[in-house]
Image (cartoon, one colour):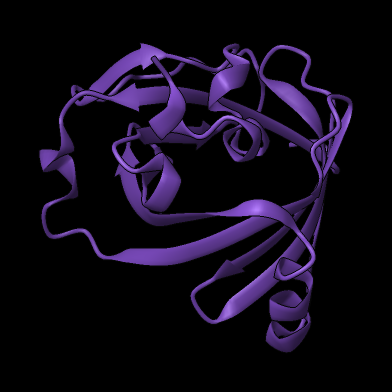
Length: 156
């Protein structure tokens, strides 16, 4: 994988039974910037916290830089973020030699369940699990930064 580049595909989850018995980690994340060409995210994942800067998506790739930060700093920065704060529980599910991250959204995005998988390259052959639905990699509505501006509950 290239340093500073995220290669990721995103799908809807068609069968939540895959999560039975899989422990999840609560996530809270907010955005200091949701600009189309760059986002700045503050994330608390269980007992860990990060600041992440992401660039413009080009296919399944985009620039990404992520750094750990103290929990107290994360909580203070989340208070500065654009509302609403994204709440979700992330489950890690291995399949086909990769780890799929399945996010079950809460709050204003309740009802949305997506799976993301990071790949070493865009040319990686991807073995889709049987619980995967439609691919939404190129649908900007499903970008977490856009779920702040247009929460899932407001979709028609």
